[in-house]
Image (cartoon, rainbow, N blue to C red; front, side):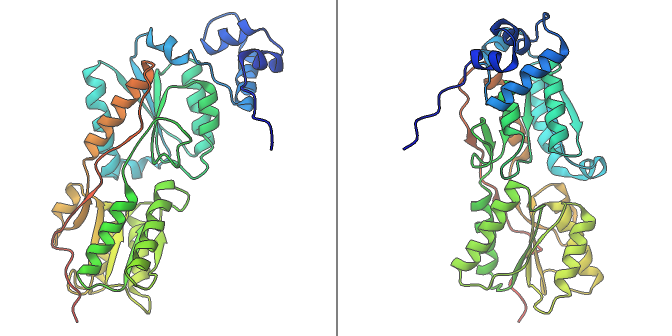
Length: 342
């Protein structure tokens, strides 16, 4: 049996970086007295050893909190069209406004770029803490940002967030409810148009989808991974409707793709809901403006964002923030779902 790993201390970091313990303290408290090169070396060693100063949150609690950060890996055009993030950000902003704080929003091209951005924000004291979104399985941000001592709240299931304080929705239960509803209507060929395979919540939904089909004794139907855009949702829908075993129902991972799928069905002469039932996720205003109106898995996205902001302020103030789920998305049946026509 191997011996337990000894806890890394500030002394270990100082020795590995070739500096004094005082220099490590100056670096992590963003005080003058160490050069930029030395500061970067200390941060790199701390990341490598997996060390973060216990005093970060307590130190920050004595400072004013006026800006929090949010980096999103999305194309700018898609973000502007995506109702989920607009509602989510408005929820965050509602809490920040009460505290006279600002949101620093940046779009990044990948997770490595986000790690560098978060390090710069924290090192240059541009933010008091950050909201981390779109977690991947084995997410590379967890180690570096924990080592940095950045106060952060993770938006994602605890299985994905490496012990960071997190807020999440129970996607697995919601997917199961959606599939069971479609099955109860009489559908036997149910497909899913999901988000990118690398995203943790997409993987959770994909697993729950397949598991629920198996529990119901239904054949494993097709799941198509996309990038959340309308164009990709349309392409995936077209592919499904041209397949030999055309589904009679499709579950989409967001409302944009569901609206696009509705357009493809009309283009191909497929009647919704008589020949094809469509079920969206998120339930924005889009779902209520289409014809027929779209059934959806609905949740309070604005409230979700507000809850995330509240937990972040707990972390910033040095409290023991408790990870928590928000209300599970619930089914709102509308005109786009019905029993399949025999």
